[in-house]
Length: 219
Image (cartoon, rainbow, N blue to C red):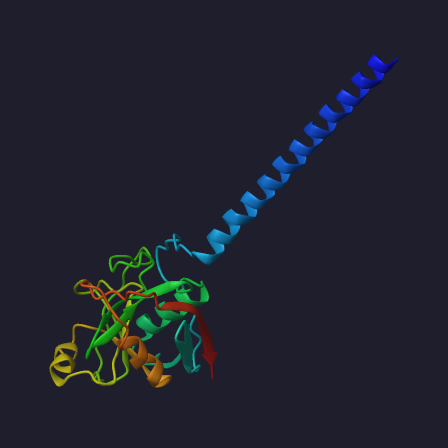
């Protein structure tokens, strides 16, 4: 009887050990799954591509947007009547949350801050391009324009001129090469604070400045 009792005790120990290992394994899988989800959430990677910008503008509506960045908010008035292609494109991408999590990948002192590239290295876009729009407006401090790689290659990248932009740089922008589609109306200090961040040899901020979201305002 004592041998049988000892055997039963040993079997119970083994059973408890197996059950314990099973619980630990399940808990490990759960934590790993949650960890993966957290990493995906905290490190947004924009992979979606489009073939064109859908028409999202409505006639008679005055559009503004608020860029909510990691250094503060920037409010921009959009020139929907003068540059409807560029404005509609920006509104479409904003409504798709395309810009959420994208960084300002280029900062040039006395010139511009530039963002809108999903790759974060200056070569990315939404998967399509659209034509330039030339107006009588001239670039000045806190203007918002489309960055491009040549004529009619506008996509998702844009830039904002800094408050201390030089006359020489303004002359270069006013050559008609870059579509001017908006201007900052609030958050000037935020623009300039981004313009003062430390950058590396490729003009990329050492510490990321992120566009967390874009709010569209209709009046």
